[in-house]
Image 1: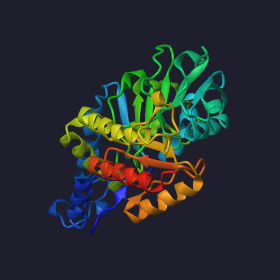
Image 2: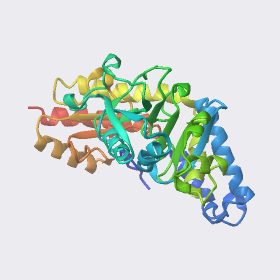
Image 3: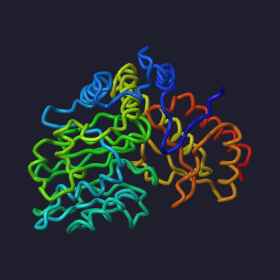
Length: 362
């Protein structure tokens, strides 16, 4: 069956090698006569997968020993609530840096729990860029400082992160984790829904510094308390076992590709191809993010008119390109080029964009 060019923002493309591997084991995992979806999460077979995924993630991201790795459910959206519930005390406030829709949603949930304020925002610039570090505000009463590392809707990304040792930084890295080297030590907590770079939807990775656990109040519901999942190694209740199995395969694929550094270089090549296509079109395509804040995961752009954009999307789909329509909140076009999107797909999209430009240039 012919595969399409998948540029979906999420759930997004998975490596073909991973899909082939999973297919070969779907009915009988390691010739044991059962699908991995049928094994007990208490079985030694599943435990090996669970532990292996944890170890591989630690290896690839160079996660220090003083951090816990959790596999949770509920997506990044549940973390919007769990974080303030666990770490925002009545005498403190939570500092949110707003760079797009997802950080706004995180702030909205925190406001239901306790005191918050906005320590920086690019809303007045229509989220076309990441705020300058020197404009960010902090307070001695900050429980934590929250940011979203990559903004899928607006196509912007933090290239480096604020380094303020007296602050506890928390980051939603759902859409760019595993795509580049990360300064884990700069963060108290990192969380990421899997459905961009880590695997299929269903599992959420949380990387949590152990000393954060001492700040958690005892009044929380059991399932919303990070200590529950640390104590039970993410096995307090039935985990999303198939999603974690797929996560383990994606991590193995990443390691076989040369690890994070090799993936990062490949991602740079892919983004260069598309941004050069946009910038070289003499205004036919216009990038929506300012150059210094451009995302390496989500390339967002417009055409000269809504009519041309609609035609572009129609002709692109006819040629096998899927997922190029921009988010419903802002429109336009968006190519999500996560780790699993092969460079051949990016080259094919660039070729299509050149052809469309020459055919419809005005």
